[in-house]
Image (cartoon, rainbow, N blue to C red; front, side):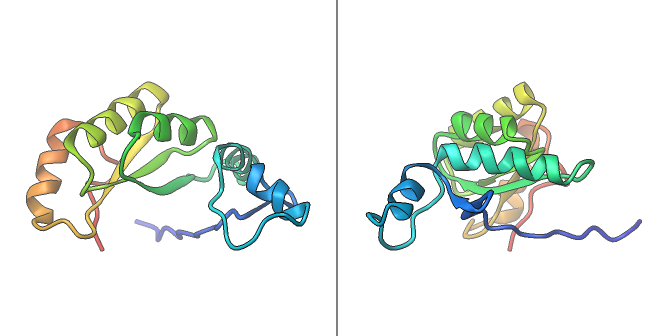
Length: 138
């Protein structure tokens, strides 16, 4: 099996400009500090990455903790094929991520960081739905 290279891209800058309201404020001189990318940036930059890297698997390592359906939908619509949810999220959040992934053709990875019993949680989650390569942990 060939090696798979995973490259992490922090998309704070999109097409040379910061994205969304925080970026507009920063560009106008009103912003300060570091702001997380908002929905507009995530969708726009994600689509740009997908277009720039045709045929590559796009992973949205979002570490979703709540609002799973909305987060998975936005990431999948932006081009992500694998989307990450935290294993410490509620069962309902993980289940809605899995269902939204099925609805939008994306796979869900479960990050087992800080899970008290990662093997038990992985088995539990695998019983609920498809995962790209099983659950993973750090």
